[in-house]
Length: 290
Length: 313
Image 1 (cartoon, rainbow over the protein chains, first blue to last red):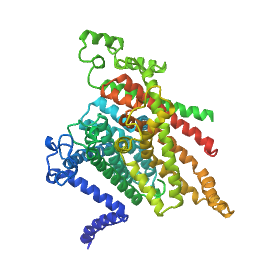
Image 2: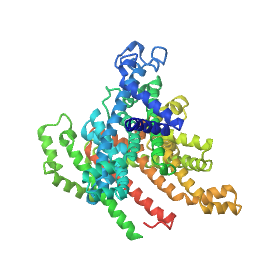
Image 3: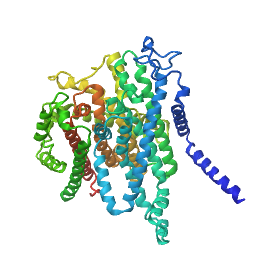
Image 4: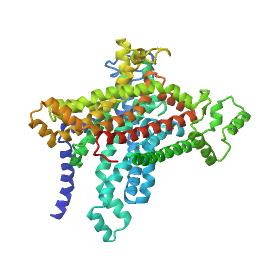
């Protein structure tokens, strides 16, 4: 009985989570779009009809047709295949930014929320970082670090970490005053157990919501950086570099610019909808606020 | 109240000082000798050494930082070899298009966002609300440079309604300038209207249920007056905040948009400075932008108390 209960409980827990999350059809649609985008990025080599780098100069700037679904670019490369491969880079960079900023921001936010002295120092730096527009700080960091995919990730992680710190700190300030934390302290539970088990588990939902939003911001920002020439080197196809290199052909071949942009909008929008859905579900009190 | 503002200003000055230190030390981390970079490939070792001396680059980093701070406080942001002029002059020359672009975009964003937010709140849960909220969410997730390229294709190249790029000839009149700014400002305005729409909707929803709104209705005031005067008037504080916040965001947005539309503003200056590693310009621009951001925040706080006397800082 006990064994069957424990094997059933987590399943129903997860099922309940998804059933509540996908009660709104829009959130379900967003999740499906994201799933398709992620699967396509992971299995790019199996899906794409053409090699993303293969040039066929005889077929340059061809309009979309049965062979090249999204047309071809200025070097005769297949735009559809490049969007799938570009998604691999754009989504990969976005995911890496999320992992970096959430883990570092989460840690610093916990510490800032729990220790008064550290709080003053960390929050001053957060304020300073947030006094610069995202994209300006990012191009500055890429300029200093040098333009490469890894440095774009690093720069965007530095840009978005302060957001995570703020959210986690605010939640930690609330949670640390709750009776169960006091009880744990009274029972002699070690500090790092209190922080990383009791407090962290209770600030997990705002972190999850924020992570979804940062994913969307990072995809948009990567595209912006690459477009400005301060991002990923142009020979790597990302949605941003595709628009950047296609823009001078836009009046003859609009598809070169149109489709990568649509990919960005679709993914960013889906992430935003999913993030909103998560927030509505995890924190009903916030539903009206924003 | 003056005392409170002074205290806030002091806090903001500290934020600025940290930004300055961050920008300065990060720049020193950059690969390559700044003097060699400034002089280009053809420079001799002797020239580089001489330039290093003139700029104090041969001194310890902390001494350099002290010297730099002293210069910044006396209003000197350094000298750009590439542009052959002081950084402050370069920034001042480029300030006009950026200023007009930001203000014009804010106007467009407010003209879209405030009515949309009010309508959305009044018709809460209905089709109109869903359509507006959907549009706001879409707008927030469109890359502004992409929307700019699409708008240029449609309105400038195909329909020929606007110039494709640039800011007109140097002696062009205000009307000509506006014609050049309308398309970029629309792009920035649309993309940035989303936040205003959401904030207006939320703060209207807060007051629409309030007792004084019910009282206004009960005494038979026309619905229009109830919403625009009684409800909107009381929802104004958060809306002013979001307008200020949007203005700060627009400064960042302007960087990308100026590049797309070839506007000779500060954003364009920064992007080209980054591409050729013109560090004095980058440092100066970052510091000035952070200062503007910080001042906007201070202005919002002061406006708060003026609009709503209940708010005490």
